[in-house]
Image (tube, rainbow over all chains, first blue to last red):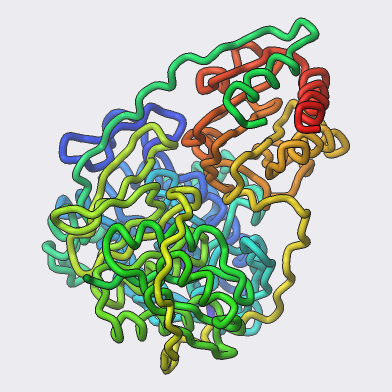
Length: 262
Length: 320
């Protein structure tokens, strides 16, 4: 039977751009160009490798996001080699927090049907890193997260998790939710052939009503957290910069002594 | 006074510093009740009491070590049901955030992660976060349910505030999903004898300019003279010069020490996201145009192989 892999990806403002907040204190998506979160490319890559190692697999990429998330987010994953896409797009989603987003993703993943859900380690905008755990909690399946190595065989997913104090080898039965880190292996570049093929791959557009989700459970109004203020960090006062003329190390030591570090 | 749950981060009863910082923050909101899962509660209890825990809820079971995350969620939920706290605080480690998120969902509460400060407020605790690679500072609240908040290391001082710290056994019954993900083996990371990167008061980092694994001893020597942790930029880690566990940046560790010394690091956004909230920043780089110099309190434009050993020698001499 075919292995059904679902990769959850996020369309985010480019982290190298000058990111801001909008007036309602949500992420300003107009100020900076959006793209597929870099950390989700690792998830697509691992899904492709698992698919290539299996006899028969199909990869669906799912995203929840604005209109542009299709062209500038999903298509990248499809051009890397995923088979089809699902895009949940609905005005009511604006301002959703991680609880709302995980609810919609869980319903979308169930809608597609899955044996394995693959996520990146965190988004590059919100950077919480808890969505995969929330998805596992909502779906009631094992959470096998923050993997630097992952493999699927005989209805089991195994992997390596590098924690703060130890490295763990993990194993769980499918269906399961995994997340992979940026140590899991360089993501491939889409080939020209892949980019052309992606244009013809199907992307299903869904609204909240298609997933049976009440609009007041998501969006800014349905969020379980509230941002009261967002202030640009004051620029650091210009420091002292000296050119090393042979005494640079000593000058630096004098500075550290003045600040009582030594 | 309302009680505040604090999940204890420990290794066999040795309490890690971020937990003591959580106790300081918890006391701003209410009476801290520590939740100790796994072995070593008797070792941990006096330390937790010394820093303000009025009570220590303890549970030990093989499940905590043998299965990933979920058994601890079950236990924290049992503690939540027993105490009905005003807030739940957890350290912002990878595991801590996952436990906190699943608990929050189960109790129908919002979650805030990676707070760098926490104050009592009229509508519940107010968390300060540093976002968009530390370009913005936000103040947020949990608006539904009991606030579940994870806090980054070095966000509060460790304070002595003796309290009873009475140990009480916590009864936990594990749900069906607790044993879903088996920890087949666990290999503790080899100790370097240096402070933990996220907890250290001083961090000395090396980047592309270090130019090879064999040269990292120059960075380590400076770190050791200062009693500091060693960090590395993504470029240095990707090149295989230093372990990923030492990576500072968006996809590595986010550090906020009193002093950060960046050597041969240009200061790309990926790196800045991990160190920009450091109190004092110092850099050594041969490129005067490197963006890291926009952040520094003191910078030396020069060859790190000249400057850093001279600095190390000077530090050692001044300390001797």
